[in-house]
Amino acid sequence: MKFFIDTANLDQIKEANDLGILDGVTTNPSLMAKEGIKGQEAVFNHYKTICEMVNGDISAEVIATEFNAIVEEGKKLAAIHKNIVVKVPMIKDGVKAIKWFTDNGIRTNCTLVFSAGQAILAAKAGAAYISPFIGRIDDSGWDGMLLIEQLSHIFQVQGYTSEILAASIRSPNHIIRCAEAGADVVTSPLESILGLLKHPLTDIGLAKFLEDAKKSA
Ligand code: E4P
Image (tube, rainbow, N blue to C red):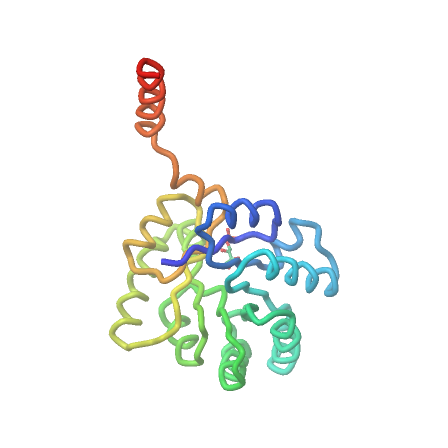
């Protein structure tokens, strides 16, 4: 399973990248706004900086929602760097645009996916990545992980080549369960990635080893 970080914060991207386990980055307009990045030029420059920091796929989201406008914006985003993956929302014009990008050699990440039906459409259109938002499904009282399990099964049975990119991660346990359920990629906040490191018995065991090491020093 590949690890992406879900942020536009450069310090957090650097910290995850320095760990040596980072395969890519996802962002969205909300994450850009959180970092105070305003205006198309600043947003495009920010994507360029991220591409120069991380050797992996970087998802850059279109704001347009109409087919021609999505295509125009996506072409500009894809021209920023070879590792840019154009992130397109799961709407009717989005599906049409994903097919256009596929036919024209531009890789896409279909975002805001909440059902198997939506994921099947995105796979048929040729999306490189499909992003089910498991945390937001959990927030609405359903079980997001069931969607990852369902998609893993469907994609295997149908031989779809799109990668299942589990998004909207809220905890280290989400990451573990995504690995178990067969997600191809998980995109997560830094906090959840670092949460995987933690175990009290590791801390207790290390303290004891260091204490005993002093006795034989
Ligand atoms: C994925 O690409 C999205 O940017 C992200 O995972 C959404 O997560 P949220 O539900 O925490 O906003």
